[in-house]
Length: 250
Image (cartoon, rainbow, N blue to C red; front, side, top):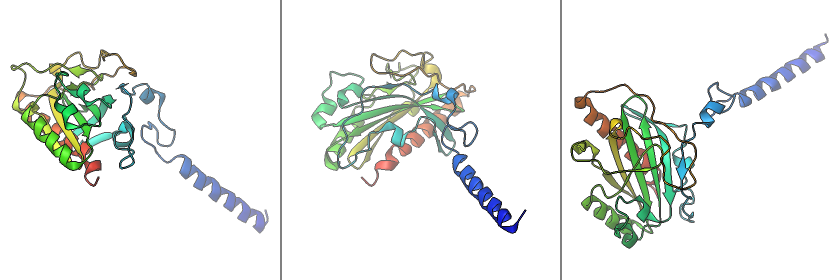
């Protein structure tokens, strides 16, 4: 083999190697890095109910659930690890209220919402975060005050994208109280509940709408009552921070 051929084969090998690196670069959802999302993962895509609210010039991606909470991305903060479950979204913010006869958000000028359920990976905890969009920061601040004055007014979203009934006093605990945060011209309302409080969650009982396949909470070990409140608090803080982080500078 001539020296020229040797150089040529080395060049070809280099190109193939470079191409191989590009092809095999891992992407979210890969079971084997580089082979793309598996069909098993694709079949577990959580349900989404409702149409995405209209985009605005100021924040065109703000209420795009896949942009901020990809279905296969793990949310990890401190001792919490969780995954996105069901999603509800729409332009009529009254839909997020436990009692839809209230004019609470309509009067506040809410422009759209995104409500997302999260399931903890290693703890029997479900979390729900609702993101509300307003015209400006002062309007959002007033809405946040109104929501803090009426704890529990925003419905809890379950893994099947349905709205959960209010917890009875015997099950409710201080750690399940919602966390209301003002982030620019957005308001986030986050809370967490024991998974056993909603044993049917994920059974595909979402209300009518363009929903996807059902999703069940991940199997988790039991935990003591003493540790449950801490797990609920950690989950709420982690999801609240994750939901608000993209909007801090808007």
